[in-house]
Image (tube, rainbow, N blue to C red; front, side, top):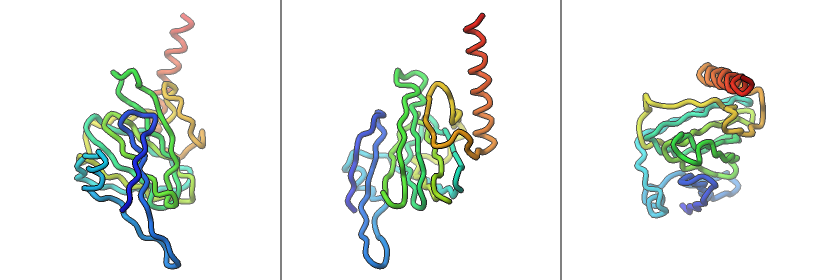
Length: 185
């Protein structure tokens, strides 16, 4: 497997590209090789894998925690993935970057703790995978996908959301209204 590691605008977040062999039968390639990733300085030990299948227009996120490193990719379809610094003690809090992940470009994102990750499905359906350095945390954070402090530019302003993500968006809207009201007092 040939692994290309690129820095992003976010400290510690890496864009990874894996190669594929393609012929008349289709494609074949690597997804993860612990020693190759460690040689590239990506030393998280992954202990838990998750997979999410979603339909066009679904937005999942922004979720994360303070302990888990994630390796994410879209193995089927195309998604717009956003990563945001959610460390409220960091001067870079709220800084974000968007990426297209697809089964055609073979891009992966290496996401350290205290970063939120979310994605919006652009294709008819998608399969998005997560390798995680820790089993599911009970101390996950959820930020609204449209939190005005981040200003993430999503492909749609009317995504399909889970109740968890819809509740986070409603809380963010109430906080924004309260902030605006305080400015006029």
